[in-house]
Amino acid sequence: MRRIGTMIAAGGLLLATACGGGGGGQTGGNTAAKQESLSVGFVAEPANLDFTATEGAAIPQALLVNVYEGLVKLDQDGKIVPLLAEKWEISPDRKTYTFTLRKGVTFSSGAPFTADDVVFSFDRVKSDWKLKIKAQLDVIDKVEKKDDTTAVVTLKQPSNGFLYALATRLGAMFSRTGVADLANKPVGTGPYQLGGWKRGDSIQLTANGTYWGTKPAIPGVTLKYFKDATAMNNALLTGGIDVISSVQAPESLQQFADPNRFQTVEGTTNGEVVLSLNNGRPPFNDKKVRQAVRHALDHKALLDTAWAGRGQLIGTMVPPTDPWYEDRTGDYPHDVNKARELLGGKTYNVKMRIPNLPYAVASAQVVKSQLAQVGITADIEPLEFPARWLDVVFKQGDYDLSIINHVEPRDMGIFADKSYYFRYDNPEFGKLLAEADKGTEQDQTDKLKQAAKLLSDDAAADWLFLFPNLIVAKKGVTGLPKNAIAESFDFTGLAKQ
Image 1 (cartoon, one colour):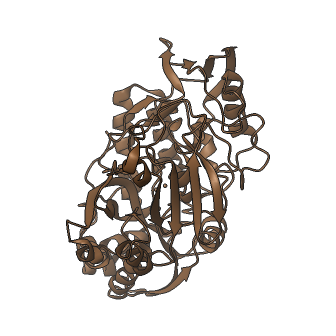
Image 2: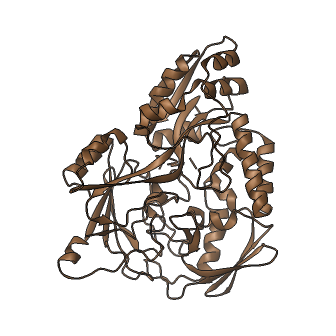
Image 3: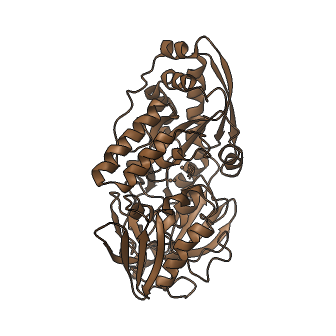
């Protein structure tokens, strides 16, 4: 998915709060007892803990910023701020980045973090990473150690996207002696370390006693995984968990209406819920059929029915938090007659293979009903997520339609890879992305707007809605992130009153 809710938490393909140091310090007395642990509910469990080789947003959601840190990170407004790098300088030609590293930083294993680890981590993206997104760092020419606390990155050409990419999992720093078993034993510089993993149930994070920054107020966090929304809701109602990280059934919010017991946080994400169309095989290798799908769908009705009206209609692979966002919801107005005209009287039977995640299942039912009105019969097949969906749909491309929440930030570039599961192939799109990256900031905005329009014109996919950030928690839990615009669920700012 490349956030495929992981692209993709998946929930995507698959999906933050305070800066790296985290929330305030721990206090004594009864307050300290309250602060000992926090349990947060999720629906998409990682298949393993190695986000360098395994797709899905569930892994960086749990580990990035919490266990692994990068040189920089995104704050709640989407701004790039320092993390392991205290500062950086960019050369006048925009090709050389000199990072000044924090002193006294160690990995949870006890190994010191130095510029050697920066070189190692960047080199490893090229040599060992298995994910397609690693191409975002192909712009790097070389990475050098100037001294223990200074690393210099030289690019082949100027890149508007380079520094932003470092705020994603691509920028995670690894220990030269800590990559032997990334799937089970992550080693990072973050405020937490892996305490335990009960597969199929939960992951425990415990405070990293040697952390360089402000210690997290909550020394122990349990990520509790649930198979369905009802079970997760019941867990909060009965005190089994403290937080629902992402509400999976918005109509259930009324259960948590008592302000003396619960609080609701509502904000935005950069997770585009995409109706994926397989451009590489019939019938969706035909642009007119793809366009017919877009005209057949009543997106407002879908959002109201499938997700209780929560979220935002966007019509594009660009969230409103990006500078190049344009409202493209009017590109394909709901028009059953126009859809039928584009189909030319033909009817089709297609496979809609979706992850067994609540938003996808609910949306698929509405899509199926609306497509039936224009002569497209969709057979819905829920697949266990992440393993089955990633294998059948994402890797093999064996599907006609799918629905997934693409939660990674600034991920429109996935359409430039014709081998990606969309199987979209338009060289002009890739050309626009390349021009956007190496040009001025204004060039970037202009070219990416053009790229988003091209995707829409080609009906490369359909964008059902922008996934909302809906969090419900016990009263007294503080530091909950209003917006989820980075890959991680940042626990470092959480506290209990």
